[in-house]
Every structure is written in structure tokens, then in C-alpha cells.
Length: 112
Image (cartoon, rainbow, N blue to C red; front, side, top):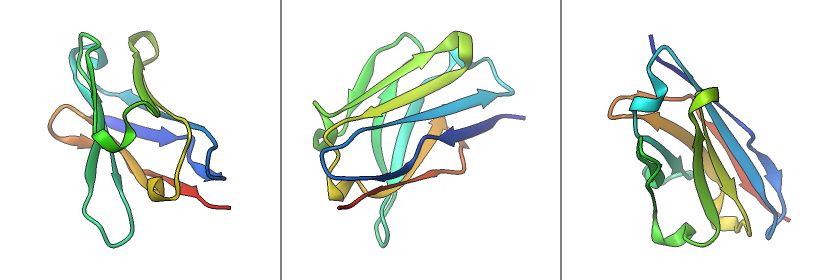
């Protein structure tokens, strides 16, 4: 059974940084594309960033130049480095493996 566990969220001031982690188990991690999504209060869940099994990355326009997705296949972990955070980045962040599997989410709050 696939399990995804996110961590690293918290409260940060505007302009600050956080690094989210998502550890996967129960699958051949290196074979899957991984993604980060987020859901702000009252809004639909949106895709933020993705990384293929081969390491190619892509980002939603609103985070380009500020967020970096990466993966460590030896640790079954995908990361989201978030820099220059803005209030509008406040959301619950979820990782997703492939097409079907989601983590439970981690809260990111950007506020002074």
C-alpha cells in the first residue's frame, strides 16, 4: 500500500523560506512522477510543481523562480524548496505520486 507523508510546513514571514518533504513507501518510488499541489481556504486544489522519474521539472507560473522541486530516489523523498514566500502561498500543500496517490497535507502559512 502506497503511503505519502509530508512534513516541513509551518508559519513563516513574507520573504521567508520553507522546505517541504514527502516520503513515500509501498512503491517503486523512482518509477513515478511526483507532484506538489496546494489548496487555499475556499479555493480549489491547484497543481504547483512536478518532477518526472527522469528529473524533468515544471512549475505553475506563480511560483517560477521561487520554488524548486527535487527528488532523492535513494531516500524515496520529494522536496519542495520555497523561497521568497508570499501571503498568497498560504495553503495546505499535498504531494502526489503518479495519478492516484496523495499525502495528507502540510499547512504553510505566510504571515507577518
